[in-house]
Length: 320
Image (tube, rainbow, N blue to C red; front, side, top):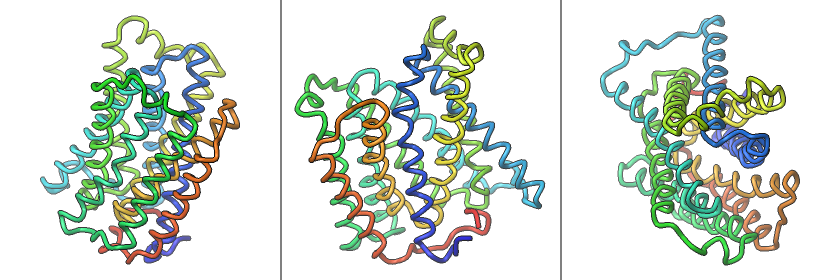
């Protein structure tokens, strides 16, 4: 069991969550080859994750946990949870639209500006000071992430930029930053699994609306896994291990160690994703990417030297 007073435990669960999120690149590519559209992928991933998280809520209740009702929340917490849910849905929408207009590398570069946005926001709100160690860790990690993403792409990754696609990708970074900042202090009386159930149900609902709005072809793709055992199995894996579990760990990490540390440690997703793509998709890894991965690890090590977060987790915020 982790000692909630020890930030190392929170850091470990964030890194595990980042590694699980990193499997999405390979999983999505495989399902696309089997005929699933991005609309269908997002709908199934969010839907399965919501079901898995609801099952976790049921288990915790059977073991003596408490169900926090919407009416029992203070008005401020209701607003915070609603904003977090909408930010999660906005993240899915903007990232999906961005992937359709610009390269994956550009989307990742824009999206992973969110740790810097969180760091600035936390400092302006007086929650987490950007001291020398945190600042250095943030800079090193961001530089390493850029090297990981661009190192294997060459100049082609920056060619033919679509301004709308870039703005959408930046929008995903803002949505993620809003989620992190709101989750740090908002709705802290809501246990992690219950909060993530609300967020995932909202994302699944928005994804379904996108599939309906995408026309007959996009909507028919949603039902494709029901007729393909292989595709169904892959979507269950994606929903549970690339959405539900890492989302739970991500929110628990935010509440445990703060938004700045969590954002920096989440950058581990970039090198892990590149390695998985090399193993399963045959994509090459260049020396620049290796150096970038090392830089991210250095940043992660530095952030452990930072002072402990300003407040401990709420009683039911994180798992024991």
